[in-house]
Image (cartoon, rainbow, N blue to C red; front, side):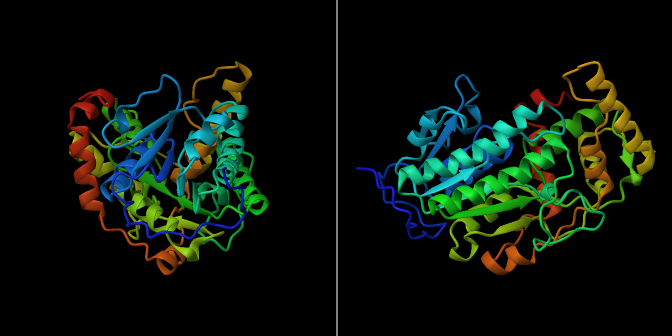
Amino acid sequence: MTSHSNEPMPATAPDAPPPAGHAPDVLVTGAGGFLGRHLVRGLAERGHRVRVLARPGSDRSPFADTADDVVTGSLEDRESLRRAAAGVTHVYNCAGVSADWGPWEEFRRANVDGPRNVVEAAHHAGSVARVLHVSTTDVYGYPKEPCDESRPPRDIGLPYNRSKVLGERAVQQASEATGVPVTIVRPVSVYGPASKDFVIEIGGLLRQNQMIYIRKGEVPAGLLYVDNAVDAMIAAAGSERTVGRAYNLRDPDRTTWREYIEALAEGMGTGTPKLSLPTPLATALAVCSEGLYKALRVTSRPVLTRHAVHLFDRDQSYGIHRAQEDFGFKSEVDFAEGMRRTLAWLDSDEGHRHVAR
């Protein structure tokens, strides 16, 4: 009989592999995405047997060689989530809509209802010692000055920001109702091989000579190399000190957007952006673009959005002292090495398929 006890299972060391031949001990949702695929690989390399939840008909190549078990389903399908969570001790929720434009209902289902369902499925399993939920520093509402976790989340009305704020709240409420231990991580700008937002999209714009700067690109980007993110997530999920807490994650260097984009452009052999917009002009263009797309009911992404302006306009060097103190967070991969690995991926067959060279 499945246990429904509210007593949390004892946490296990994040680097301790399960016994040989053991059934999957870890569940990863969103394994087909950028962060999820790297997390599955990182867990497998540490000896864990990983189960993933994958949508019907979705591309399974990102985890084909690293996942031990695949359950077909989604965050909206509670029965599939229960099947996926059965018997595991740790659940990593990497699934969600990460975009700056789209219908609110899509954000709500993926980023609010989905995470709540994950915690409830973990409770039904009765074996889960920890749910690690991936959020974002966007929950702070893009303050003019970077902050640490003492600042409460702030909904400023943009769909991604709002949905992630509500998603954290849903996870916390579900944890309180079920007794399932939850930890939240808030990465800043995660880059690396296969990054949709910061490698594929920016690389494509550079290739087409369409990339522009805001404020001359001199704003700290809050970069986090993906392997450093994976290390932090696994360490946070295995620490007793992190239960019920949220953590900002970024690499310690205050690398600017200009430094990042110029390194990417140099490695790709493209030109660097020639145009820089001041914040007031960029904001006005974003507001006009969004208004026009809404009026015309255009479903594609506007040329410029307020979310994008905030991202490139606001200092993203959020405080990480709490993560350093509670689970020894440190970035093993520095910026130079992170870019080397990223550019090597862009030169691979997969990279060429995403960014034509």
